[in-house]
Amino acid sequence: MTDTAQSTAARGLTRWQAIPLAIGSIAGSGILFLPSAVYARAGHNSLLVWALSILLCLPMLLMFDDMVRSNPDGRGIEAFIRLGLGDVFARCVPVMFIALVIVGLPSGAFVAGRYVAQTFDMARATTITIAVAVLVAALLINLAGVRASTRVQTAATWGLVLVATVLLLSAVPSARDGLDTVVPGTSGLDVVLPGVLLSFWAFAGFENLTFLAREFRNPERDFLPVSSIALTVYGIFTILLTVAIAVTVPRGDVDQVVGLLQLVEAVGWGQAMLWAVTFIACCAMLLNAIAWVWGVSQLTYDAADNGMLPAVLVMSGGEKSRKRSLTLLAVLFSATTVLLGFKPSLVVDTTATASAIFMLLYVLSIVSYVRVRGLTVRSGLNLVLFVVIAVSLLESLQHALYGVLVLIAALVTQTVRRRRKNGTPAPEAREAAAGPPAGEPAEDGDR
Image 1: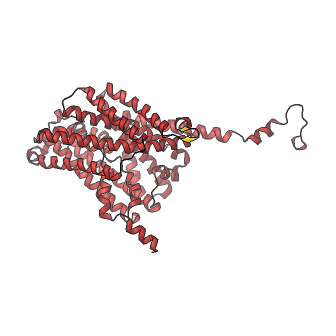
Image 2 (image 1 turned 120 degrees about the vertical axis):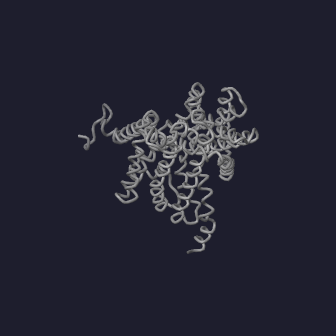
Image 3 (image 1 turned 180 degrees about the vertical axis):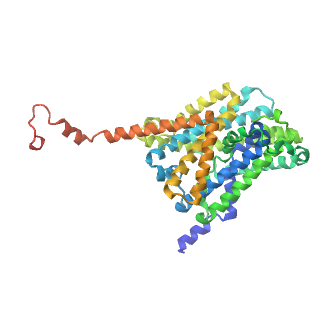
């Protein structure tokens, strides 16, 4: 190993240093409401929903492990899909992510708003005000060119995890008599796959691990064990949190959005803990929004560059304009915010809709993976996953329809654009086809 290689390895993260960051990469705002939302919808089969969701992630870990081994410097899903499905499908990826974020981010902001309104017993207008404030703050902070550091984002996530751990321990005494509420049964199985689509939002940052791998000391060796441990720890945590809510709050009384606050009240920690949970939840959501807005603003540039969006939306004077990009996002966020303002009960449904887009992106990744690698054990497992995801999307067609329509529209736009581009002759060819100007004799070669 050269001195440069040794220096690079020394700077990389060891396996045990990477695990906490990997858990923070997976964990997000979903921890605020998904345990209660899954229990409210799936009831005693909630644990079956979570177990199936975690199992679905395992074949994808193997797929992404192969991707990291092939490209240890990190390449996004767009590049991964391009390998197997070509440029047309790959260029649709930025648009899919934009469509996802303009639905998912306002939904998360409304969750933060509900936490504030519930904690301080305020009217519904408070929910809308806080949600708008989170989105506006994220846009303005990005407009100023400020980005929250990864350490700050991770600290906020771990703060939320720490508070939730305290709540888990507080719910242990209730578990002795209430575990029957989460014992899986044969009744209500029809809600399992739709529940999986919803719960999958908890692992929506899954592909972030492939980017995080660039920081590992040995990405090819460490990605699979690090990501597997992170997935297992976070999966068990969401399961235990769901159990804690189930054994302390009657299912009929569970609020799908602020179940965590109900857990605080049920274990009797008092007003101070309510305030702490709400404060950390709002901070975590704001940091999450800042990161997503920054990322999706970059994707709008990509979408404009490849013709999926009009260049004028993100370009000013021939240069990329952050102001125009963020203005576009503000307009798109406004549409979802108005919808949720009039119908706040749709927060969980819009989250499921965003989760469905992630599933569609994974479907494209799996098809690309199989085409590149052929039929192997790993690709075979992902084909099984493909079938389960497809059935889940069909079972929740009302949530999947938005993503499917966006994908179809993006494919049609890209295909039409390519045909027009390929069908337009070069200036020289057009002149030759038109012949000499009227009144001028033709050249010998034109006769």
